[in-house]
Every structure is written in C-alpha cells, then in structure tokens.
Image (cartoon, rainbow, N blue to C red; front, side, top):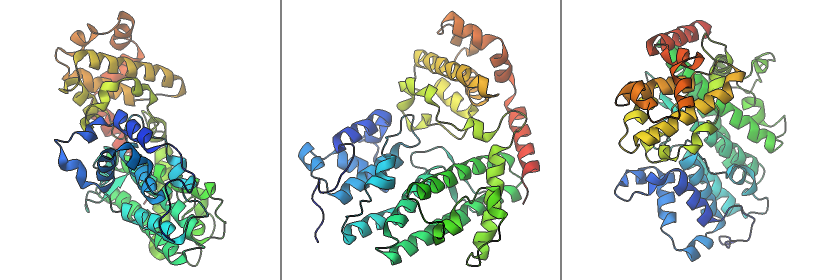
Length: 399
C-alpha cells in the first residue's frame, strides 16, 4: 500500500496552527541568519516545514505530520510554552489501522530521534563528568514516544518492537551510569541535577505504558516499569533481566529517592515544576540564552536576564514581577528556592543593582523584594546554598 493521503487517519492540530505556536514560543529558531539550527534534525524539519505554502502543509502525509508533531514537541518542550501535541505523538497518531510500512517508518523515525542532539534547544541537561554523555529531561520525551512506538508495533512488527525495547533499556542503563559518574566524581550538584532528570524521564516512560494498558507480563513492562521506585526492588528481579539492567535499576531507585529527598533548603521534586509564572514575560522568548536550566540553580540564568541585550530594563522589571508572583503562589507549599536564586542573579548583573532595579518596579513589588522572607532567601550566598545542597546530596546517595 502506498503512503497515506493527508487525512485518511485522524490528526489533531493543523500544521499551520502548530507552526504558529512554535514561532510564538521559540521565534529565534526561524532567524535565517543562524544556520546552526539546521544541525539538529528536529529543528531542521521545523524550519523546512515552515517554508512550505499552505496547500503543501495541508497535504502532509500521515508520516510527515507525525514528524512535524515530534519535531514541534522536541523543539518547544524546554521553552516557556510547549506545544500541546503529547497525546498525538504518544497515542492518537499510532492508529491501529495504519499500514505496516507507515507504522515502520514512524517507529524508525523514533529510533533515529534517540541520537538527536537534545542540547540544541535546552539548558536542562548535564554531561557525565567522565564520559561527557548527555542526560536531559528531553530523554523522557524520547522515552514517551519510544514506549508508544513499542506498544504500537509489538504485535504487528515484533522485530522493530524488539529493537525499540533494546534502545529503551540501553537508555535506562546509560542514565544510571551517568548518575554514578557524578557520585564517583563527588559532584553533589551534578548528582542532584541528574537525579531530577532521571525521575522526570522514568515518569514519562511509566505514564505511556499505563496509557497503552501494556500487559503486566510484557517484557518491556517487566523490565522497565517503575524502575525508579523502591518497591520495584522488593521482588526478585526477573531471570531475564541482564546484569547491567539489574544494576542500573538499583541506581535509578537512588535517583528517585534523591529527587524527593528533603534537603536543608528544598527538594528537587518541589522545585522542578512547569514555571507557569514566567509565561507572561514574553521577553524571555527572544533568545535561546534565556531558556530555563534545571531548578533551583537559577543564579546564572538570572544574571543573564539582568544584562541580556535583548531584554530592556522594563522587561527585566516584568520578569522580576513574574518571579515574585510565582514565589508568592508557591510559598504556601514549601520553601521554594528557585525564584529567589533567579532574583539574586538578576540583582548581581543589573546595572545599578537592587536600588536602580526597584525604580522600575511598582512600590509594593519593590517592598517585597527589599524586605521580609523573600529578601532573606535572596540574600543567602550562592556558594553557601550550593555547597550545602551538594554536600547533602552526597550524604544521601547510596551507591
């Protein structure tokens, strides 16, 4: 059977609207003076598809539409307003009536995406101190489409499903190995960042297996489901589990525990949310430089905001207001530290410091920034903040 016609199977958002959403949240991707964006395949797909005329966009095949949705997801998931195509790429587009050749093309595209440079448009990643390998929250996005591809192909294309299974296991093993690299290097902050990325990634993997109601006896579910949870170690490991995966699962449980651990200042789980408060500050969408890193380590990010050439003093004031609003909303849930760290960074780089910054703020906002519990948090020296978190991470991590 030849490739599907444009609308033979259901799809969600139209290509023109999807591209407009991408351009809204990461407009700098479409700066034609910067050809470096074409290095990452998913960004190249976005740029090439955006150049098509409306009729060509509407005529995209099912496979081409899937490529666009995956690329839009990877291209914006680390932005302030990610595109909402999760259900498309994790479920809806894997229609049970797809011809085998289309299904295989989609699955192979997912396999290819495992090797993409996920740092091209994300700051939420770490590199193993010994190997230099990347561990990113975007690997969780890959887990989610890989699990969907596995579930869609396991009966129709078992050989392809077996390859997907192997890639998922290898990614689990690699993430555990990178975590252990930080432990061996005695890098507590790296350990925390790796742990929170792993916890996010495993959550994505579990959710898609649940979404597809993957049978409890299925090998992927037996080997990889709830890999970051303590209870997964209470039962004997399946005899089919390789030694490397068995060892990895124990490290992944440590990552999950460390992500939830209550440290002196905060916990990583409490800090790494969706940061809705910053969506209102549209100036933050003008440059890749302003993408958010792993929380709560926002001092450097705040310093970039405070002096970035694409951000005016009035823009900085708006960002400060958003940070304070976000902190006020999150304060009842705990001692969130991310936004105070960002504010401290802004103050350190803004020309004229806190005094001049307050000139751009409403008096009530300036008062909140100058005094009270928020000022106490902002005044905590960065070195002390990071040293204590790193030390506690190393004490709590059990190899």
